[in-house]
Amino acid sequence: MKISEILNNNRVTVSFEVFPPKQWDKIENTKQIVAKMCEDAPSFMSVTYGAAGTTSGFTTEIASKIKECGVEPLSHLTCLTSTRDKIHQVVNELSDNGIENILALRGDIPQGFEFSQKQYFTNAYQLVNEIKSINPNFCIGAACYPEIHPESKNRVEDIAHLKEKVDCGVEFLTSQMFFDNEKFFNFVEMCLIKGIDVPIIAGIMPITNANQIKRSIELSNSSVPTKFFRIMERFGDDPNKMKQAGIIYATEQIIDLMANGINNIHIYTMNKPDVANAIMRGISEIINE
Ligand code: FAD
Image (tube, rainbow, N blue to C red):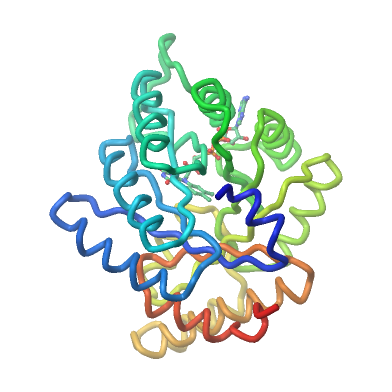
């Protein structure tokens, strides 16, 4: 089933993100994690694409496992460091495995990477066009950034590029993680003003240990509200307390989003079924329609 249909059919959706292992010998372990998470019946489950695409087969394997568990998979795909042939190979592989949904991404610029004349893909919109040319039946999503992509000069430029990307045939957007809902509300409003009218799924990252926050902020450019800093200051040294506080913070964020009319939530689970399950239990009545 296409994610666009899921987003249009259900009034409320809660989806999960998982990542594949770095080594093949851990694939069965990740499959078990996936199977456990599917017990919570997420609306769909996305699986990330390893940096530089070195483990592309792992993504397909995990996406196939998600499908086998009765949940719709969304396979991420990055293009910056890929050749056109490699993209064709992966897209055909996904198609052969019955995967219908791709999150089309550029990928981060690796350290020391030089853009050359031969560079085939420089931005995600080109990948959207390429996937459409290989197989127009894929439902394609893309990434968006409530607090601006780190490389963008300003919000106006970032949203203009986002609009161009959506106009290439993107049917939904998944947001970068954010910890302050006001940033997301403002972003959604700005998108609507600029004519971006596809569903925008709110990306929520439960921070369950103090080390995770530093890395997450570095990668995402997300600002952290004082309220969350205080939680870390008080509970950051105690893993159990921090885990509970992180789950409750994420749950409260979701409740507030939904109270403000946001119906599509994506949880960056970090492959932790217990965390995903605790959040789902915390919102079980709220999402029950
Ligand atoms: P783009 O849409 O190409 O945007 C990148 C930058 O270029 C932005 O600043 C944009 O404003 C600018 N830009 C866009 N179009 C143009 C243009 N025509 N001219 C000039 N500038 C332009 N990374 C992975 O490696 N694997 C994953 O699985 C993965 N999953 C992700 C999932 C989500 C939901 C998110 C939010 C990010 C994910 N990432 C992943 C990280 C992502 O690859 C990086 O954030 C990357 O830096 C940008 O990718 P993009 O697809 O948004 O790029």
